[in-house]
Structures are given as C-alpha cells and as structure tokens.
Image (cartoon, one colour):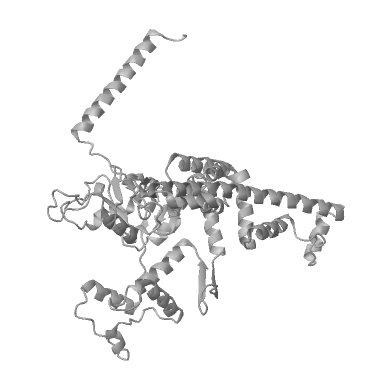
Length: 503
C-alpha cells in the first residue's frame, strides 16, 4: 500500500480523481463488512449469555415470581453479568476504539444490513452509498413496521442503484418520502418520539480550552424556529458590525438566554451611543435595513420556508411538505405552521413568470419557482439551504447584450450556494441544464457529475416544467398518437366481431 501511495505523486489530475473514487468505493465495501461482523459478534455473545443463564437458572421460576422479584428491586439477571449486547458493545468498542454509543450503532446497523435493509445494505457493499448514509437510513426506518420495511428497502435500493449519487440532505429526504408513502403511521410514531426525546446538552469543548459545546435535539419545527430566530437577530445589526454571522448567532443565543429579544449592535455608531436609548440610523442605511433594525428592537421575527401542495393545506390529502434545511414534515404539522404564514402560490398551469427574460435579476415569483423545485444547493454533494442560495444563470447572462446571452428564464436558472457559485464563475467548472431543470457539472479534469437526482420536483411533480400543450410540434405528435390508439381500438373491435365466444 505504501508503494502504491508513493506512485500517486506521478499521476495526473484525472487519474487522481479515479483513485479518489476507487478509495471511496473500497472504504464503503469495508464498512459493509465491518458492520456485519459487529452484528455477528453480537450474535455469538448473545448465545454465550443465554447459555450461561441456562446453567444458573433452571427455568422453574414462573413469570409471576420473576415479576415479584423485579418489583422488589432485584435484578433477575444480576448473577449473569452484562447481557449479550453489552458484551458485544464493549468488544466492538475496544477493537475500533470508539465510544459505547458508536459501537452500539454499528451493531444495530449490522443487524439491519442482515435482516431489515438487506437490499439497501448491498448498495453500501457496492460503494454506491457510504456508511453515514446507511446509518441515516437505519435510524430513520427504526419505527417502520415489519410489513412496510420490505417495500421501503426495495424502493430505496432501487432509487440508489438507478440514479447517480446524491447529497446527504437529498438522500435523507428520499428516505423520509418513502417512509411517508409506505408507512404513514410510523411518521406519527416518530413525531411522538421526537417530542419525548427532546433535550439540550452543554459540555466543555474537548478541542478548545475555555469553550463550551452546546447541543440540542428538537422536533424539526422547533429547531427551525430557533434557527430562524437566531438568523433574524444576527441580521438585525448594522452592516458595520465587526462580527461575522456565526459570531452574531452565538451572541444572539446568549442574549435570548438573558431574556433579550434583540441583539445589541457593536458598530462604532452604536457603541458610541451605548448609553442613549435612541440610536440614530446611519444616513446610508437603506429602508429594508431600517425595518430590520426596528423589528429587532421589538423582537426579531423568525422566518423559515416551507413548500407544500395547496391540496394538502385544504385537507384534500395528507401529502408531506418540505421545510428548508430540515426535510420532510407531516401534513398535520404543516397546516398548523402555515395557519398564519405569508404564502406565495405557484400555478403550473399559468404562464411561466419569465416576464423580463432580459433582466438580470429574476422576479420574486420566478425565484420562488426555481427554489421550490430544489431541496438544497444544486452542486453535487452540497447540503446548503436552498432558500439562502444564490440564483445562478447556467448560460451566463450577457450584460452588454441581454438578448444574446443566457436569459433569466426558468430553464436557465438554478440555486447555488455562494461557495459553489463562485467556484463555477471563476474556475473552469462547466454546468449544463436540461428541459426538466436537471443539472450536470463538468469538473476541471473533465469528469461529469449529476447535480440533483432527488429534488423538490420529485416531491412535488406539479413543479416539473412542461411543454406548452398548444405547441404545433406537440399537437402533431398528439394527433398521431390518438390516430394509433383509434386504429388499435378498431382492430380489436373487428377481431371481437369475427371471433365471438366461445373461441
């Protein structure tokens, strides 16, 4: 192996990309074997524990006697030591040098690979997904019924094998969408579990002396509310504030803990008037920023984005919706969230909102349509929130002659986070977009990557672009198709008349 890595120094960039892909596939195959092995160790330790129990307990005690022993505060298994799972956790943890929680997760994943998600685990063995994605599938399907898990496993494996790799947020949304389709009852069970498992932990930071690390487990809607509130507070200060966004979010969290609903601005103008109730607005501050500051003084208003079918809001169906940055949300929760929300309606039967294709900045309705059709940044593997992403022109907009360059229309726009937007604009990355909005990205080495398999258009088919039904080309093909159908019906009718029963 050392000799092979030494030879990598002589490889070209395209060859190094192939080596990188090969390494990822090899690691995934090894991880598949690792979790199966952990599960097999658990089997052996469980058998060992059961055998030891049989030597000590003759089995003569009745269930009532065992219950009385438990009620008296006695552990009926105290003489047998750790059970099979605990023994396996200790052993796997020692071999891999991981925590008991991680060892337990690997054992559970191995059991799922052998019995519950067999087809999906094979995609891990083939390197189509990595261990992180498989663990997500295992945990998210934990409450699915035995009757539904087979269908979910088969459809998930089929989607993985039939399509290019996808980012973790797309993969997670795909899993949740399949669960909502094949086992809706488990969605309710998961919602109840999320409520009971909510918690906040604050521990010393292991990597930075003097720091603390805060973690929380909250239902998605509550987490989105906290996240949006911190964003609103962080964005309420003046542009001259010396802190970056993450620092302002951290300060906003501390401010909330102290009972404040606004984040004090630390720009020179505000600090100079720290003891004055009314801080003058800078002369160059625009109207939107002044409104934001006023909102902050009254309490920042959290804003988050949800995409859902109108039929679901009206109670005509229970299809799930998508909460930006957090994934699938059930219909009941969505209706409560959107009761007082500002709404923007997208009608696929109306004309596309490309009212100014020669204007660089798209309209608000066009932006909503583009972002509703995605789940995150379009770039391969990126999980950046779609509603905070930039709108990128696939074919660059020609500022000198807008009628000749890439126009501001639905088929030429896609969301890209600022990082990947800059990478595409200033480097040799190339991108392409088909009529259905699907994007391909070509790297500097010439490798092609599919940007988005599972998208908002997959969740909400009504967002899929479609050709004008009145287009002459489509009318010609439709007429020919109707003619073939009519001919087939006539042929069948004549055959039936010529061959009356009994045949």
